[in-house]
Length: 136
Image 1: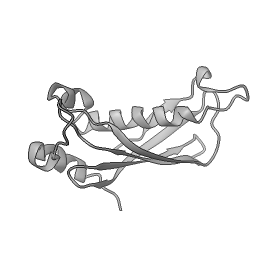
Image 2 (image 1 turned 30 degrees about the vertical axis):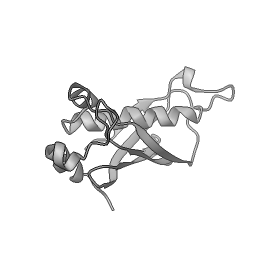
Image 3 (image 1 turned 120 degrees about the vertical axis):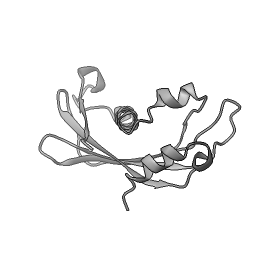
């Protein structure tokens, strides 16, 4: 799967001209949303089914700065999925192919009542699609 591309916008930078650290979390979400759409399981599909997937944990490692107009390439991969908890990995690179960021997000799946959804039972097609992208 092709990495997601994000161009750093002027409003995403601070007074030093460097992309503010909080934006990387937004870029993670942009890339994750695009990844899920590409495999046929976008958030729109889940929401129509009454399923939400909140973030339950994040970890980030900033490696290099990015600045206005830099193009950041974001590779999304699945670290772990047990049918209840999904752990997604992200590697961001600049146009010189240098790693600028590594991170992970964890998610669960909830129904409209806020109860955990066991995806292996409720959505086996999703489980099959997502496990194809698990990396060790």
